[in-house]
Length: 438
View 1: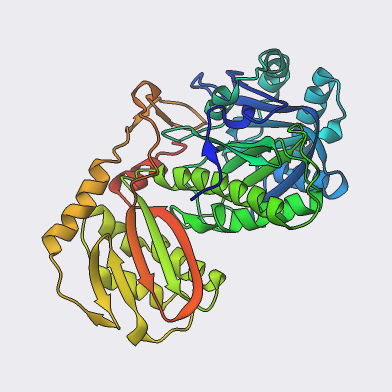
View 2: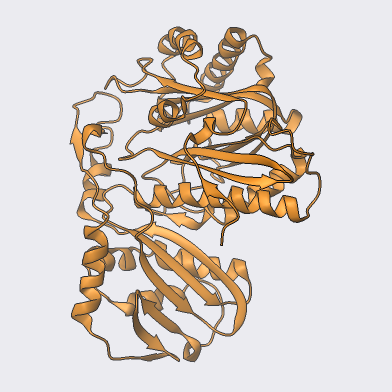
C-alpha cells in the first residue's frame, strides 16, 4: 500500500510555491498561453530533457543553466510557439524573456528556467511576452496551479495535475505536478512538458538522480505516436519549506521521497498517454520474466508503441498475434516457448502456444474500457499560422487514468518487470495532425 495520499493543489500544494496562467496573446485563439511557477525561496532544481538533436532554445537554455547553477526560483512557460529551429534569434528571445521576468520579480536571471510549446519553427511573439509578464507576475497565487496547468496546454483535451503528501519524520512533505502533452509523444522524453514542485530539503545531486530514475519509469515509458519532440522538458524544484532535515544520501527517507516522486510522474505520464491525439483509451502493458527492469520496459514500450497493436485495440480486435510479434522484435532475447500473453482477464497464449478464448467477450472488454473512458472531441478554430486545433473545454470531463486496457506479457523466469503506457490509434489522429498548421 502506498505510503502517501492524494491532496488537491497541484504545484502549489507544497509549501512556498505560487503559480498562475494568463491570456497573453501568444495564441490567436485567445486561450490562456503563459504560465509561471514561483518558489518563494531558492529551490534546488533538476531536469530531464529531449534526446533530440533538434532542440528548442528553452532546452539549450535550461541545460546550460542547470550545468552552472542548480538554484532556481521560477519556471516560465509559453504556449503557442515552440521557439525550436529558430536560430540565434530564438535564443535571444529566450534570454530576453528570462531577463524581463527576473527584473519583474527582482531576482537573478540565472534563477529563471524556461519552457515553450507550440509549432516548431515559430519564434515567441515577443510583444505579447513583454506586455504579458507584468500581468503574469501580478496574478501569482497560492492557488494558481490550475491556471498554470491550463496555460501550458495546446492540443490537449484535458489538463494534467496531481499532488501527493507523505510524512518524513514528524512533518508533512508534499510533491505536486502539472504536465501537458497529447501528440509527438515517444520515450526518451516523450511534445511533453512537466513541472514538479516539492517542499522537502534534498541535495541537488540526489534530487537529479531521483528525477532521472522517475522519468525512466514514467515519461520515458509512454508513447503515443513514435515521435520525440524538440521541446520535451521535465523540471523539478525542491525548496525545503517543509522544514524536514536535509536528505543527502539514499536511505529510507530518500526511498520514500523518490517513490512519491515516481508516483507523481507516473500519474502525469499516464494522463498524457490517455490524452493522446484522437485516442479512445489508455493502454497499459505489464511485462514480467525479463532479465532486468530495463529489458522488461523495452519489451513493454515496443508493444504499446506498435501501430498494429494500437490499431487492433482501436478496432476492439483481440489480435494477440500482433502483441507476440511486437514482443519478438523488441531486441530482448527470450525463448518463444516461454511467452505468455493475457488481455484483461483473458489468457490468450501460454508456454508459446495459443489458447482457445471467447473472442466476443474479449472484444467486449475492449469496448467496455473505451466506453468508460470517453473524451471530448476537437473543434476547429480557423487559426492562421498557429495551432488550428483547439478544444471546447466547456465539455471536458475529469481526466481518467484508472481504467486502462491491460496487456500482461511474460517472457521467461527472470526477475525483471516493467510497465509502459500508450493509447490506441484512431482515424482522428491522422485528421488532427494532417490539419495541424494548415
